[in-house]
Image 1 (spheres, rainbow over the protein chains, first blue to last red):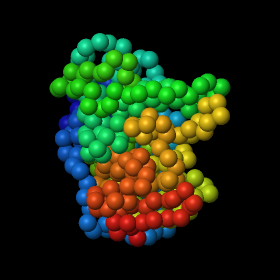
Image 2: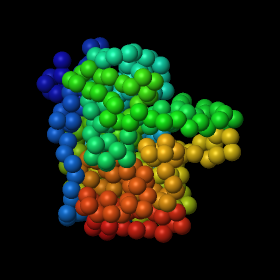
Image 3: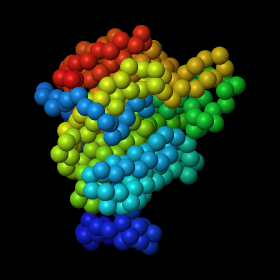
Image 4: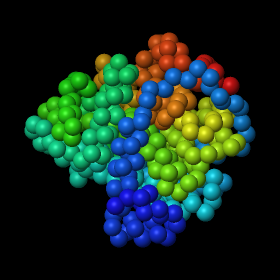
Length: 62
Length: 290
């Protein structure tokens, strides 16, 4: 079972699906494997970055 | 925009969505994903699949999820010429980092052990063979990879632009017309800036001042040089990289700290926007960093 195939969109339905059929794991694995299949080594010549204000998140040591 | 934060894996998770109504579902999906990944590869819980594999001799059939996580770690090791080596887990344990940072025994002795090296880890399909006694630390890649996967999962399932941050490893997916402004600052006494990334980009920072612990008379940090099995010299306080995905970004930031003097050359060769804070607090930028 896959949440995307079912067209699940609402929080309530997804929550119920996760609780009842453990779809979370299947979705997670599908997303991981899909992402891994498409991962490529990065090389960015045009950074497309700019300075900004009012940050939405912080990157720090990890 | 709407955001939520919560604690996970000894750090903070944050999700920001461009469609506010999707926020509750986004959090559920992310928590589910992180729970699955933790059960697969945590080295702090004896019931994880990774720790069970370490107790076995010979090849072990592991789940597709764990196989993928190990594959990603081995790929990072290869692409970093061994600077990001998952087998440093054995050395981290010997230095006392064998449990959550908040519970480390500060009175213990920091031991030095050799590691088997990433090439000794064999993965064939889903069959994983670990060197005897080896403990894999997937921390350098699994958290960043989890951020990548969570962002993709939320964007695909909920049709929203999304930013997912796991302890400062940040991935984005879906639309973000105004980009994603990110505060770049490791510790509060470090120099800071705000950089805006276009939709789909990722950013990561690695640090020699975060995730520290005391062991006897030594103050240690978690970025180990696989050649010495000791914490990398503190030539850089932190390194930040922007890349197409968070896994690549984190691999480069970790490798830069390990490479020390060679970090600038290495980052220039990869042609990525990067920002390095030296031990004296001075800042170097390259690769089109604004």
